[in-house]
Image 1 (cartoon, one colour):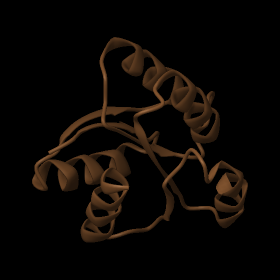
Image 2 (image 1 turned 45 degrees about the vertical axis):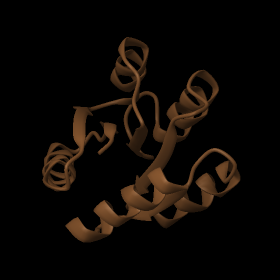
Image 3 (image 1 turned 90 degrees about the horizontal axis):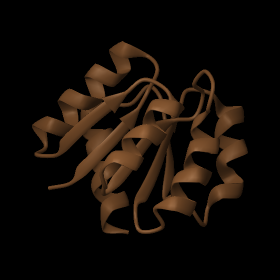
Image 4 (image 1 turned 90 degrees about the vertical axis):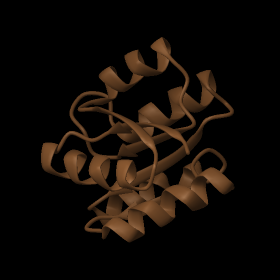
Length: 119
């Protein structure tokens, strides 16, 4: 399936999403902040960046902007639990396939990933 970089600072959410995506046949590398995600992107290629918007340090929007510039063929999917952050990501429509709202089910995140990869 796909090689996915998951940037999520909440460990429980990261573990939930990682398990769900591995169950659906994907390879997942979890990292816990935007800086670690940038380092991972510099080390190897990924098909998809799945990132939380609200993270300490480098947030998901700044990460998406940098990642899309450096890796234009990589798909980007954002997650957030805050409606205001979803609106903030609205300006990134050309770079980001979708913003999925937390909480989500295993099937919802798996479907969002499949749709993003197919876009």
